[in-house]
Image (cartoon, rainbow over all chains, first blue to last red):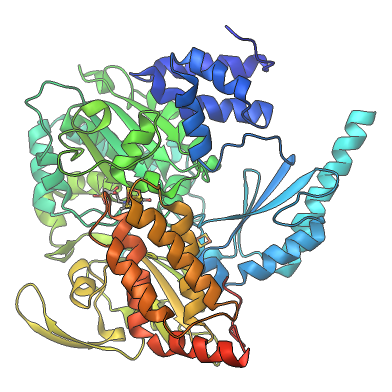
Length: 170
Length: 451
Ligand SMILES: Cc1cc2nc3c(=O)[nH]c(=O)nc-3n(C[C@H](O)[C@H](O)[C@H](O)COP(=O)(O)O)c2cc1C
Ligand code: SF4
Ligand code: FES
């Protein structure tokens, strides 16, 4: 078995989830979720590890990682801001808000911020259309995001970064 | 006075002090219907559901009791129950409310459905973008297991059933029930062809499987509470029970509103419940049942006959909120997502926005859908960047007609209908784009950018 540099709790979660399913292969999404949460992305090595774990061929994992938008094959920014752009949110000004967030955070839809800290992406309908525009910052959900809320979201992300770097340097 | 809601599914959801933990649920009579159901024969529960004439709330409006009846019980294979919590049809945001605010209502109803169908293992397939919802459900299931409502030997009986919360990974097509099943099997979510792959016969692991929407399932405990017959008297005969309508877009008070089937009209929903348009704005169009439903023009008149042969002559505002009325006017109630557009909207941009969604979400199995959705996106986007051509409107319709009816799953229709209806009903705007292109003027002048 190949070795991945995983947190012990990640490995525990993987081991615990597989036997819940009648067929091992069904555990592929939860296993990939846990691994991406720990490692930040799914490398070829990770895919091969998953294949061994679930008694599959690597191609069976590869086709999953490449199909589902949520899984990433490359490392990306530490924080991901998803701005819903689908019609109901667009009617409430989502495109403008997305622009605002990019300016505030110093990134574009194509390029993460220079320090690699944050990326802004478009998302499709996040099922919060009644309170659009809606934005997700990692797992956190924000509704009715107007310009001032967008500023506050950006300020919070930058604040978190400062807090993080002082933590690691002290 | 706006019409008052009849809240059954969302009865407690927004009450001050109502929490999503099991203690609160039990204080409000929670799990009493599970006890009641366990004193009934599984077949009798299925019979009550059939009597209720409950129809699916996920999009297709198929009668739940009939679906359950189609379960192949003779094969001897295990039976599975799947709750579809993928909620990704643009304009729809009701399942999120239920999961976040009243998860035990769903779990109690699922366990009744599982017992009635003979399911030993049930799943909630929840979209990745509901991370908090997944945690809430997992916690609620743990609480229910600790109280012996889920797991081994439920309520001291010989019946055992587990529920697994299974998270998706950002693909809309996982909401289509056979795509969902493939996804749950650990494969790409490529929808299966029907026939033969009707889930009730050949579903998860080729075993009989019931797939129902979150809201559909939540109705089960209420059917047990009052009985199928009594339930069928709520609403109209073809739209029994309540429905949660999700209103988004250009109204003053967007939100989710629960009404008995056919109790109010689209006009009452928009003007009374949602308080109408923003100041100085006029209604232009409504997409009534999630983004795939055909758009309706504010000034259209609809004539024809309903299923019971009565004739109708309606304006947009007169359409009663039920399944058959929206069918009769050439659209659908779909997922209950009502998207309201005012006169600031550039309809070509609005369509370009939706086409970008469908091009992104096509699973790619069928050539007409994969290629056609992309072409429709490219054409409408080009039209919005000052390069519209006079033949574009007809070209769009021609592409959409070549998708519809030629694909494995209903996504083919879902992605063609917006284009067909937008062009048919707002042709002038599509034509005007081409003449604007010649004069270099583009985009909506007063509305928000949509693409
Ligand atoms: C492209 C497509 C997407 C769908 N997305 C959803 C969805 O997000 N949620 C849902 O409940 N049903 C969705 N459906 C409908 C399901 O296929 C299925 O009909 C439904 O889950 C059955 O449950 P019901 O009978 O309780 O409505 C979708 C259908 C199609 C064709
Ligand atoms: S119609 Fe589209 S989404 Fe459905 S199976 Fe075919 S390619 Fe996939
Ligand atoms: S369109 Fe943005 S949440 Fe639905």
